[in-house]
Image (cartoon, rainbow, N blue to C red; front, side, top):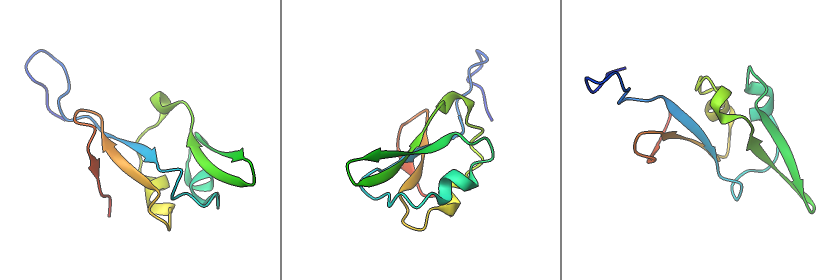
Length: 86
């Protein structure tokens, strides 16, 4: 990680962003999260994943890797642009 000279980090880790429209509610990301920060939310007759306590997320990327539908993407905190994770 780099700083801008003032001690502020300029290259912040990726934050997982869940696209509820793509999420099937399978729960693979829930099982993959080592801190159990992802839960399934029920709305009507469907489920979708929700990231709780994003500030506690270590940005390990396990949830992104576990999603077969690519419903979870890594978002750069500094620019808020989606970056694909391989």
